[in-house]
Image (cartoon, rainbow, N blue to C red; front, side, top):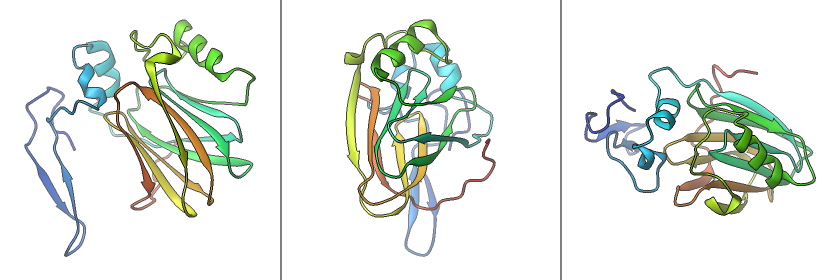
Length: 190
């Protein structure tokens, strides 16, 4: 939850009750070293990532061995599971995302999209695959799951036991995976 587009001017800590014993804590205005906000000195990138507009879920369905490019900021490869999976991306509406059908060399295609700036924004510091950390995630249990990319947004999806994803994020950016706290896909663009 943010109340301002200017760093360091937001509230200190928000404590939002979910029920009598559960809370969500938010620390807006506090920059985390493993978050996209660490690139605050890149005003163009921040203009895309931070927004004063509401986030609207972007639904992207991909088939097995397909990928989702979140500009050149992140990539999700769908490696094992059902034939098709729908992902709901909750990111700034200014960030362009694209589902990619399986290709022979997805790394090469991802770098081409970055170099040619096919999707906005394109971070200039991401020039090769060695600029990314790679995480293989084997999903436990069936049902709704979430991925959170620190400072960028989160991705919700329904998976089956043993589904496998490979996630690429810039080096040092935090990635969190787990069961969804609730799945409400309202305002999704199809």
